[in-house]
Image (cartoon, rainbow, N blue to C red):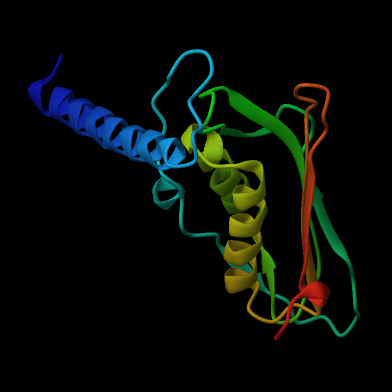
Length: 164
């Protein structure tokens, strides 16, 4: 392997190892031990930070809904190291901006190696999308995760429920 490429790979593995160890120490404070195999994952800060946007200048009010197909959205459970698959829905009425779809897709894909709880990833996506849209009339981000242990988890963040 090319020495420069090998150095990059080693740095990435070290980054993931350090974060995984930090997450395990944090969970241990609450008496939580990982079940199954321990796998490396990245922190939320490693996700793609940018989402391109396009000005929205139409005078009409429209509702925009982006919904992933089953199996398209995933992150890593920090407790088991296994992927958490869910259907993600983002709904908003544009103010000044709309999201550029290809950029948004790359943003979502960037979560595939991130170790994060289902609740935290939903809130983080809400915050990121809101920052890029700046002034939507409203924004809702919802995740509906595959059943695990007989429980289906649905997490919903709605701008209309937030304190300004």
